[in-house]
Image (cartoon, rainbow, N blue to C red; front, side, top):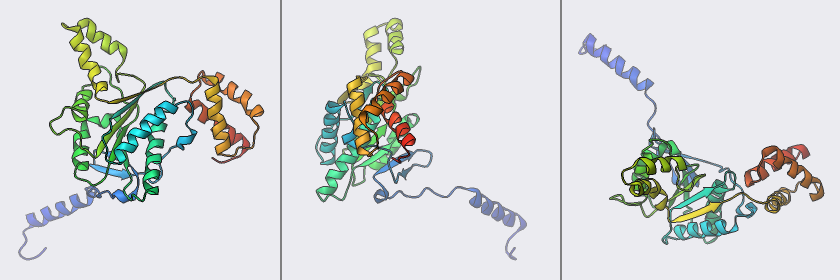
Length: 291
């Protein structure tokens, strides 16, 4: 303690120093060149770089050619500065919705790299519970000289959840509108992002049923591109597995893996891209072949 300091001042300085040591460090400013994909952490107002995205090559996605071509073209237009639509990928579970989003992002960035463009499109994963923080994220992205695809996987709303209203305003209709450098892709098992019984309850209890239903389903209307995914048949399921076997050079003949693949679907009770990939992981493990 110096001669000019009182005991109270000394105590306050010690408390301030202790609080500084306990406080978390300020969030680091994210570097756009650190990665092509990020995860939004709203509690820190920070984007965390993802060094390696968990995805498959777009050529390995079988049975969804129409959806693949449409989303790829939409993403390509956006990357090139042309008008593009927000996209809702809805339908059967495990049908390849989130895989297609990540694969199309990688494919378009590969095209940009081949053309000499050094500014790839950034993919930002946004968790469903963080939807209310979207305006803060858009404020962060709006002034940046890059293009961003916001990706929310398994988006849906239940009960009295009012977060869908804030998403409606962000997608279309807000006073600021969606920034030109931002696009929103979402996947859901529900076409209107809400359970049917929730919509029907509104229809039965509202004074004007049509208005109540319009309020609930209008969120999905904010997505200009709807892509439906459905359960695949057995031939498509075999095509998926055949593609994986060839891509990863698994040492097994088709006559050998076919009955195993059928048995695998019986134990899972379904055929889908996810089931096919899970079978390939099991098969590769049996063969001692890393993927």
